[in-house]
Image (cartoon, rainbow, N blue to C red):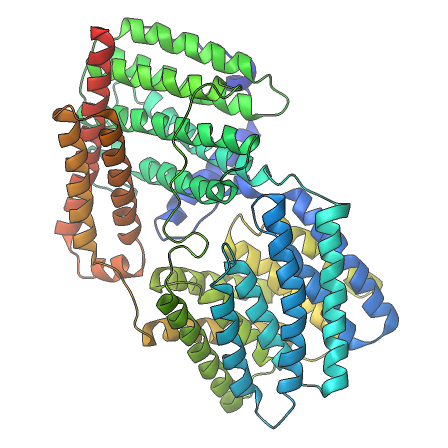
Length: 622
């Protein structure tokens, strides 16, 4: 067997050890959760955001406790929500969206609190109407989805605190003070690198590519798991595709930005190139195509190349050295393997490594294609109208349930409707389950909070600590985020508005709100999209067109367009197989669909092999 040495000791040996094994185990859990449309992205743990969020909440919390005025609790909530509103993007975009939230949220808080006091039960009318208007307004903002969501949250919470004109103004002023303080902290006093989300998304992609390459390198003469159907079939392919899509969703926000955004554009192109080569190698391992020696040599080299890329992403590693070593290793493999497909894979990896090494921008890449639901996302005014009606309908259900069953904190249930109902059936179903589970876990843990004692000081320190944890984990996993968020809101509510059974009320209200959101999305023209068999059929057709474009020697631009279309169709089918519609479909034991899904993956793999074989032939001819 040909020997491929590990050339970067810092990069590859650093992968060993307890920390690497832990992160790899977490990514394994993430791949399992992705089967059920739940995400777990440990690379998005952001301690800096956690520390900054803690500082943002600490100041208004101390002032609220010291002044002893409950309405100043709105400054605490406003500071926290403003930190949540800070989304990935260039500084100008973040400042713009945050300013809109600070001003718009203050107006919404005033209108909601005052309008709810005009007449008994007027909140049942004002709440749905105000949320409907906010949803339509936010739909006109590019990348304004989170601004609309949090502004709607402000509206339904303000309605839970009806006040006369003067008191509503004081409540709004407290909100403005807290949100303006967070705005100044985020944009001036404690600025976090705007391009950090890009780097995290890139590291998430490289880590999943490394997991896939690690598995292939460890096969040698052992059979591939995907030779036969199993519950985790094609888990690495799915994980990489989803990570690349998440990377693209972040990158499209930086369109036209220089510097790190240009580097990230090349990293995305390199990741897609590497994934295409690994996809071809993965299929070769499934089919046991080619010799074991060549498969193993190529897999080892691919693994080491991705490991060296991971090493180059660490700030303490020199950027050029690991990538240069990986390129040298890949050239050695290319000279030794004889199969055209394997040579093409080696050439593709070499091209990807060249892109990653290109710090001067000499190599041009096509701009990232934005997903269809980014920003206003191509969502038509009719779609935004439908979304507003869904949320208004969900709120009506919640207010009716609150009046019927006497919910203690109905605005918590209304909040659940807003944050859960943020898309179609697929998103709402996943968010519903995650919020219920997170609320149950957080509510159980919150029952221990009264044991803290220590007057206002110890609970305040606990609230600041919980804020830091919640903000740091907000992009890692929604269930974990809701768990700590529940504990935080229970503790702060108990400090500023003491009551009995707050933790239990939070759990019950979140469950009621989540169920209402799910019912609302079903009630207002639910869009399941094409059925699973149709999505699989579309995926097979798209991958066949990709293969046909390769076989007919179409121009490279046409082949690349066909490859991207095949990737999108494959992702849609993969996700649909494990969302609510796919789960209901599998209840009827449709083995034919599972077989078709495996066929789609094989067609995709064979198309990738054909493409890389053509690359190898062209290189040999040159």
